[in-house]
Length: 393
Image (cartoon, rainbow, N blue to C red; front, side):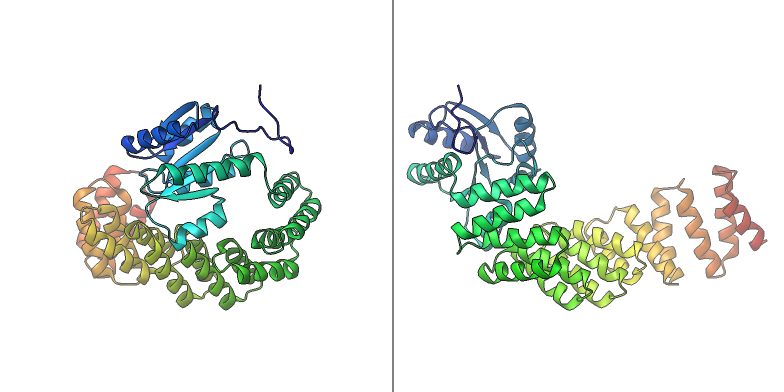
């Protein structure tokens, strides 16, 4: 029979709990299990070797606590944590993060993603006992501030933002030196579209906690709504610097700036986003696609050129670079990429059409006609090819 705590939550029995251990090294999973057994923590144990496997297991099995490695393939511990916190059924699962080093990013993640605790490698029985004991005590006996914030979250999700604000204010009263209720109050006013109050409390939270990426992000959103791009840039850049995994902020901000015809600022944001990305090549390609969509062809071609140097057999990139150059009127440059791409993709009608258009632009009509005829052979109903043929006749 499950014991129920003061606030209606199930009490976790340390000796009877089910523990999920997530690490890409099986030896580390077994080592953590061994330490927990020595400490008399846990009755049943599950292993997962990356975040995807752990997430799938959490959908099927009841787990009382998880011990998760920070860096793993496929889905990192941080990404898994985000999935858990966004799931209404799982979001209160106590999670201890295991990491090789304590750095600013981890502290920021603790603030933004609600890591219950993190522990440094190499693990010791004493350190593990201290962290697990602390996490379980907080889960079973939540401090008043956390109880108020939890109720505020429930009110918000049920559409009663005013009741949520009242709970957050009570959380502030019991923990006046914590920035978390303050930033939550700012967020709730943001949700009510009361930007003046939202700005006030988010600024206070950002001042109290220099690593509060959540507050910086929403301040950036507020200033974007006001078209105060310089202030928005300041806070969104802070958010990206504090928590580099959230490079999506940079992508969205850069896209907004491009759409506002603030190209120089947009490119500066994109450069920063690429620098902070864990996968610079992939990020360069993603930024290039955004630039192509928004007719920033020169920067797109530059980025795609870097990616092509690292992956020279990417014929799809050759076509994109050709398209960017053709849009800028660099038809001879475009042709060199279209022709190279065509060697691999000989039946691609769009590629043939682009190549034919570039030939026409530099006056090589016969070569254009040959390509247009081959297009019609493949696609007899291609009206654009027929029209171009008539024009070149």
